[in-house]
Length: 274
Image (tube, rainbow, N blue to C red):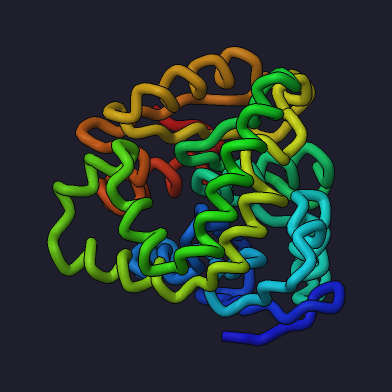
């Protein structure tokens, strides 16, 4: 584990496994690099796994300026992380918000990313009208988080229909996830919504046809909204493939970890998946 200063802010990051074949892991909103710990025994023997707490999450900084959380600035922080550890090129795996960030990185720094794995993610919202409406709702939620605190927010967040399939998880797994979410700060989560929410990020739909990297899209079959989004993405990506995981919802890496890890490792080894 390491505490690093990236572009003037403290970040928490860790590197596991051999020094070759790097794989950068990017967690989702309310998450941290700890969300990947259960996969390290599967990934760690073959890959140099790089976990990082994204700005506003976990043990990384939660600065007071909301404009510091924009996707271009957070992406620049991650490039600085790779430079600090002298990693010229890496594969990247991102989940949900982390997937949107991974896609942004691959589109804007293509030479630094060899392969792209997006779990339950999207290129953002296509139209300005959609983004404006989402920014308004994200701002309202950010205000609510700051007014009510993390414990109340996590209780609200975990009741969303998006997480219904997590009821199949063992109690201890759900409790660890709950406790991890509670480690975040109200300011960090609120500003992350303002800076990197789906409404705030630039749309990446138009960049998909030009994305040359082999790209694996992983979605739980129960997550019907994201199945539809990722089918559309797969049709636009020149080297993209869609992999559906049965009996799983939005968090396939938690709900079906063995199937998830197998799909990821086959893709990283071959550039393809069944």
